[in-house]
Length: 306
Image 1 (cartoon, rainbow, N blue to C red):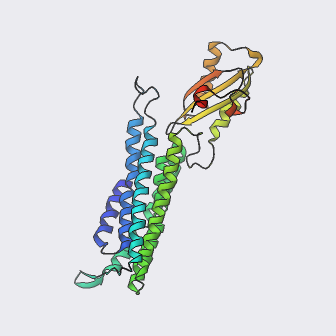
Image 2: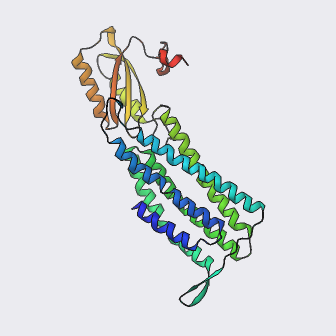
Image 3: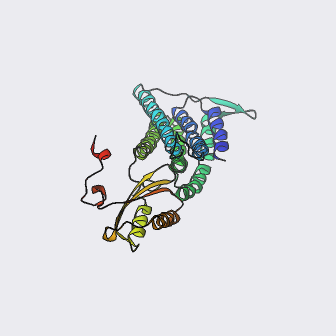
């Protein structure tokens, strides 16, 4: 549905774009809006592949790669538009908007521009709200980026309308100013998503779908492990693999007695049952928790050799 809607809106905007920089910026933003849904669809197909000897953790990272690709595209075009619009403002360019013949009448093209932007302002907001719910349930940051862009599309539409209207009343700079406003929004979205994608690929602590806070599942896992009678202390390292988590839970057995294999397997299954996002979990009995989890133990050799 999103791709079909974007195909219609980009065509309409292209047909009435004229020489307006604001309309050009809005059209480029619409074209860039294809990146997140296409990245999401492609990443979902790749992530569904089973693990292999070459990729023992599976292909879940495809979601993070798709997130990064979409973010880089946003940053690149946002920066280009920012420079292009800024130069137009400095050069004091006066974009002409002519008239077109429609049903035998001569109509100022600006009216058509504003009408198209007004028509295309509302549907993306509704789509964005629907996608946001799915992004929360699926813990999919590519889908969240797509939804976030959709929800903000009305700002682009209003800014474009103001820019075109400004030309109509003789404010030549309004068009370039509106284009700058749109470009800034694109660059901001790109930077925010690129930062989130890079930190996820660098195995930062698993965060919520909107990167607002550490994911609550980390605390739930640790609380469950600490509630077991044979566990004295526990702490987990959780990395975001895309839309599922890889968990390493370090456990200090009570009395130093390592439980049987059957107990460890039952504990692993219980942890998996807490949430579908726990795709892979490793239980590691230790004498002392690692330092990054509040323990006094030494950091692992792989983490200290830099």
